[in-house]
Length: 77
Image (tube, rainbow, N blue to C red; front, side, top):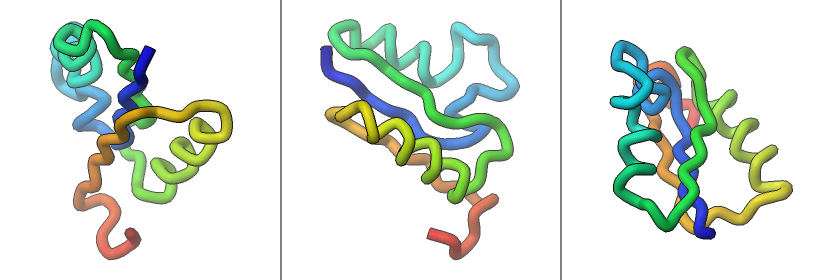
């Protein structure tokens, strides 16, 4: 099954919305033939995100990576 990875912080985590309204769940409902994996948590900055993605890529080969870069990582990418 193809994998789509979401790398980010509170936006991809779905802070402020119900679980069913989170970006990962909404994308998974639309991409029924893919596995949607969330790598991120609220307050993650670019360094945290990169570490999570590096760990994931050691054992996985996603077909798509969507990376949310936000203002909590200014000029660090």
